Image (cartoon, rainbow, N blue to C red):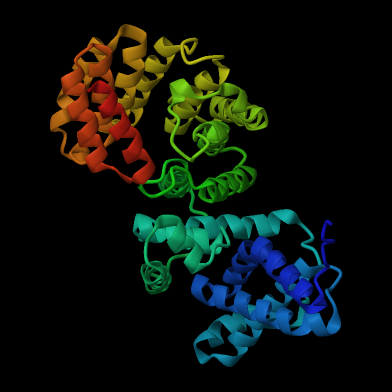
Length: 429
């Protein structure tokens, strides 16, 4: 006899879930709007949390308002005005803006969506300010823009909650003590700051796409958070080619996620992936974003495609191919060569070597890799011996390949990847 599902006996619990869901979706915009008033992201987050507490207290008693998001926004902004009135340190600011705010009730919905979008864009640039370390930028961005809690961020990056909490507190303190302006910079500063913003989003995605440590190969939630941030940013900055390019890159990379792990969660290499499991909708979105990047670049830049545009084009080459062997490897090798000129790094050279190995053979790739073996930045980078092992195996040099795979297995901190590398070493034996 099948047991009938029971409904939640507690209407209050249902309302609480509604509050939490609305707040998670709307908190970035609320924090951004309040930051414009108080000019401090830490205080803005506290006021947004105050609005959440007020909703948890009032909605179960009075009912959910017709527009929950506007209710939270209005409550948080009123708290901001009250704070400005109370605190002497905000006396001058009250004289400038408090009188207007105290007689102006925020509309239920923004009269112009661009108003809030502008605030959200300012918040993106603030959380990714170069004055903060990369780790602090990531933690603060996920907290304020991704809506993640401190425990969720800690679990995602496999670090103690106290570490994440310290990073967030220090980041807020740094922004306050350095009096970082809540603004979108222009000119050269904007270009430099935009690079920081895109880097943070890409780092978040990569940690989800190929986890550096832990028991899981993928962390889909991180990929989703990064992709959501990239999509928001592309909507806010439609004329920036590299913003669209990053979005395209993440869409195309995310399209392979389902095929990148086997039944037991083990990694599946690109050449062995079942391409019918690639998400065609995400691929189509990626192609559309890449077309936008190319169109924006044609009107705003004269130096050719940027680093993210080149990487997105490489990802598009993989998406167009029906099989690993059908991939346009010569073009990918050429694109990596262009990327090495635009953004030189040993990791780009390593990726170029992989493409060259498919276009010209493993011996040509080993010549590219040879100088990388003495590169300090790659000393503990497990993918260097992993790639070298694959090239040696293809040349029939099994003993050398086995040693490389074992070294790669020792260097990785991801258990799934370690098992894969150990299995490849065993095959060489």
